[in-house]
Amino acid sequence: MMSDVCPIIGVDHLEFFVGNAKQSAQFYSRCFGFQNTAYRGLETGERKTSSYVMEQGEIRFVLTSAMVGDHPINKSVMKHGDTIGVMAFQVPDVTAAYRYAISQGAVGAIPPTEQDDEHGTLRYAAVRSFGDVLVKFVERQAYSGPFAPGFVARASVPGPNAGLKRIDHIVGNVERGMMDRWVEFFQKAMGFELRMHFDEQTISTEYSALMSKVLQNGSKTIVNINEPADGLRKSQIEEFLDFHYGPGIQHIALETTDIVQAVVQLRQAGVEFLPIPKTYYENLEDWVREIDVPVEKLAELGILVDRDEDGYLLQLFTKPLGDRPTLFFEVIERHGCRGFGAGNFKSLFVALEREQALRGNL
Image (cartoon, rainbow, N blue to C red):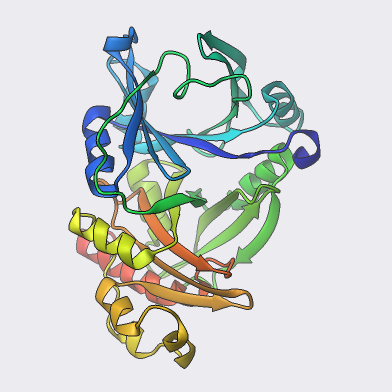
């Protein structure tokens, strides 16, 4: 197993391929409270791309756009819109990680590579995963720079901090019949283990359904893989695949320790969240009234609540971050619960279908 040969330490960063990195950096700063900590572009000698490193808590996003017409990032944006093109995992040994993944059937994209500057040596490599998403291995032990060689530190003024702490999980959407293939990829190539499986009976409404498998490794890095299931109408996964023009990362769950404050801050900054029917709060079980947040406050902010044998969680979902109904964020606060809000699937999917209908895509 990968966990024995070369463990994954955790998520190093997610790289977004976007049409305008400078404007996107302003969006993530002003709306979500991220701080621009490093930059690479024309002023640093880079002639083909422009990249902004955005950080909050342990979360690190890299926003990259291309300045050359036929650059692969421009082609990605034309096809997918703004999307997450790279999932980067930090590992203790890039060469071992890459060789192991290749030995287990992964397709190489970037062989083990070293970059040096006055801050040391950064090592990385990458393999291909679902759609056009790359899985990148990053080795940072010998590097102390702001992000990577070629980047310079930035001391920008962030927007009001939203209290987002870490990436809770990453969710990818794949074509019908392909979920098990990519689950096996993460299991064999990177040592993830299957933690949960939701079938079409668990995640369904009157009109649509999907299937999902949850993978986790020893560092508690979590990746979920979804595929559409048969339904009377188009599922949210099919809508994503249609407008993303293929598989990709559907959403990122961002963990907070104070979801009420986070949501209040995000709403004030202009972030739009998925509206939840008031009937959801009228039908909550009595145990919900024992949690730290009054039901009235949950209803006011549209926060969902669920529990398992270990505790409870609070969660809600943004509307799509761009014009295409593709990438969005989840905000989640956990109190022992290690689930994903299975008790909310019905209400959540009804809300999603309402939004699909407004877009003419149900």
